[in-house]
Length: 222
Ligand code: C5P
Image (cartoon, rainbow, N blue to C red; front, side, top):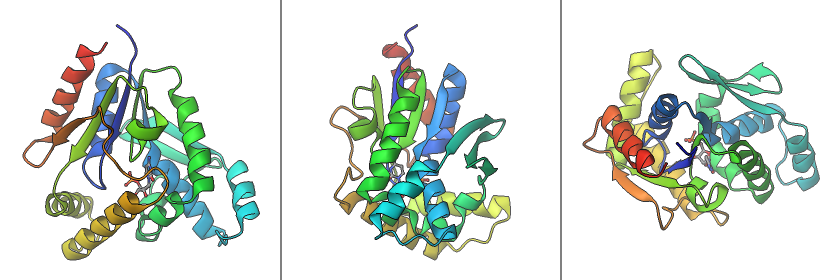
């Protein structure tokens, strides 16, 4: 079997990472959560109170920043300069700032380069917003996951409640919609379905059904 590349894109909270993890696990592929990379750099910028208008500072920060994605039993651990920030990068402040940081050309250039290096040998499942359109334009399989903002907010809400995290459904819906708007309307590699991507509406599908559909499409391309 040929080792292919699988790109999974779509709006916030569409279940991309959950499904991508399952698919990568079943195929024995590497899973790369590119959103986690943007979140990690956002976390560092917030923590260090970097003024993003200072281009040279931002460039230097990027060149000095090490982000590692390490496989773990329940998914992936994110190391920022060697420190585990897996939970910190999911906090509200990061979530609500990440789209404005991810819109910066300097930031995207660097992250895309790193992602392309990770993906160069194939055998990879990468999820994000611009994977099929920019990061892995030659991926053998491109998926675009969709679900209404109501359904996505409800799923995220349930997830939070189950984890015992505070959660406000109305606020979640607003935040998801705003992030989608920012990601879709930004100038540099906005969120778009790649021309040759397979669209999957997950509204009425379970996680396993979505994963199985992607696995079947992957088998056809190996
Ligand atoms: O996937 P996740 O929701 O964790 O991504 C967080 C944010 O990172 C997105 O809302 C988007 O602004 C940015 N992102 C991006 N390009 C990617 C992945 C994520 O701009 N490939």
